Length: 132
Image 1 (spheres, one colour):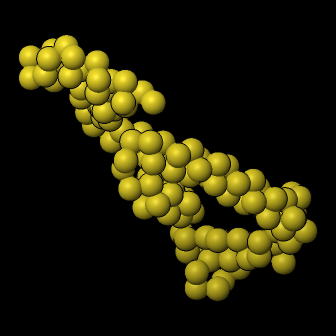
Image 2 (cartoon, one colour):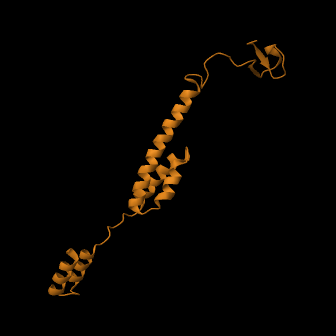
């Protein structure tokens, strides 16, 4: 039963040059038989959890960078494709010019004072009002 059968179906290997096993080796360990379906399920769950953690960090960073955080989160949780999207996000983030921090009202006031648009008295008055 474990002999070689050619494509035509003859048992003599000399009849044809194309051979294939008559049966797969039943009972022998195959690709997924070590650990059974439980091990495959466990690996799948672990990989998906890793992907969720990566997606969470991408979401947090995209939110800080103002880069459409929900979209990046969705793209990074797609199985298999998500890992590629996480790499793409890192590349885009590094190439993109950094965001300047938002100016506070006190910073704007200091700039106006430095340019000479307001006097020292106006600066001090406005600064006291803003700091309160």
